[in-house]
Amino acid sequence: MQLLTAPLALLVDTLSFVVSALSLVAIRAPEPAPPARDERRSLRDEIGEGLRLILSTPLLWANAACRATLVSSGSIVFAVYLLYLNRALGLAPAAIGAVLAAGGPSSLLAGALAGRLARSTRLGRVLVVAAALAGAGNLLLPLASGPPRVAVPLLIAAGWVSGCCGTLYDLLQVSLRQAITPTRLLGRMTTTARFIILGTTPLGALGGGLLGDALGLRATLLVGAAGSSLAFLWLLCSPVRKLDTMPAPLVEEAAALDG
Image (cartoon, rainbow, N blue to C red; front, side, top):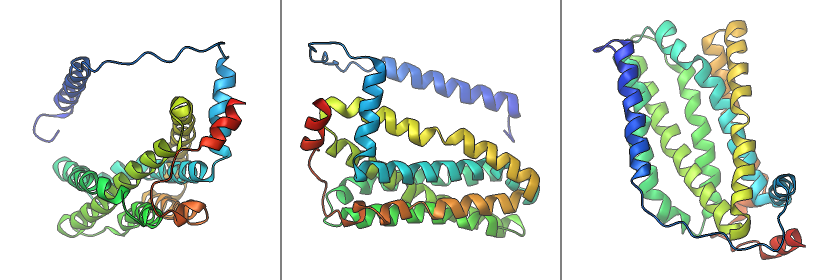
């Protein structure tokens, strides 16, 4: 943006989405046909089935609640974050871009570690710690102050902690959900979980905007960071923390839902 101006920067971003779409079109993986069903069920029944599965399974609802808290609190932070970087800290567009890009390499690191940690004998502890650090990283944001040479390293450190631990938690909690959910219910479980999690995004963004007007940018960041740093408590107070390894699918629950 600093080199090309904002309109051209947006054009480059738009072209990146075109490349992404073409890449998806180029995928040639065969999609197996769904198994035949004796009777068609209503959409309402299938939505209810996914909701019952999550609410009746502590491992699923604890992770959904934790992720929803991280997302809603993160939306509060992001609603004022760019204004904070530009107005409160006076960073130039290039510096802002560097800060926002800082979490990228850390996410790659998390991806490289996720497979090994998913096979860990202390999976529950890894999930709790990853969620706790993902939220706690945001606490560094309102602490940033002073000239760019002082503020930017602290902001990059926050991006590294949140990016690495947040990606690691995401990968592991999705793997856990998929591991314990019977294949027939994967679509319903995933849709319900994503609705619960992503449905909090507009509420957090709206709340962040209102808090920014009422409390100021730094105070709003502190509120969002405090919320995200407490998200791990959903896991700590659930059976998730006691997991040793990736559990088997929920055969009994699936049979009850089928019945």
